[in-house]
Length: 195
Image (cartoon, rainbow, N blue to C red; front, side, top):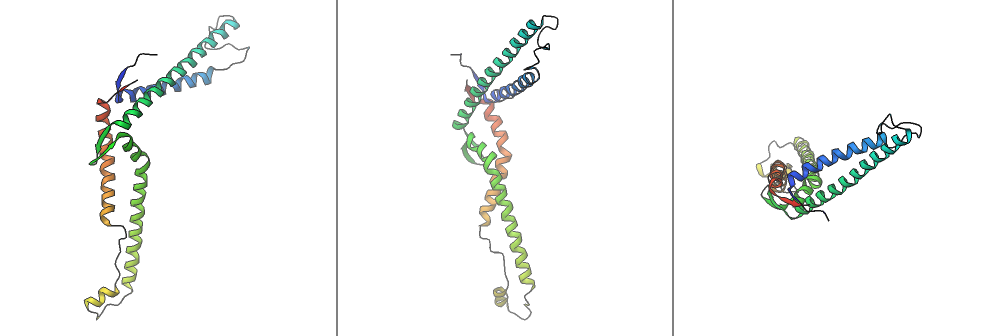
């Protein structure tokens, strides 16, 4: 079994980016040179060598690339798994709410769009109701009515979702999205994982 090593999550995330770039290069090289005509020389082998030797050199080069690909994918999985494990256990405070990093990432990636949509749809509902109230009230003649009678016949927007809940959701979302990246950067710089 290989020796375990420690690194910060920030360093691990950088390593994952590097591995992705290396995997992409290997994919491109294999895509460009992974198969040739048996009567052609491979650019991966010595162009002055015999055709068989050229092909054998190319085969060895591609085998080496494929081995690198397998090693890099194993390393990527180990690092990513270690990050995910740390994210499930590491507690952070974002927008005055305590949660694991994993919960925060799920909220940002999956839930925040639904909250944004909810706020937008609610705003549309309020606008529709406001327009309806305006049209209704514009059609009512209140001349000569006392204040109590006017209050009975005029319409007003009835907020079925408490305004406070909407403001609370809106404020949490804004603060959460503003604070999360900075919080993650701070925590990722000090949290170590073992791979």
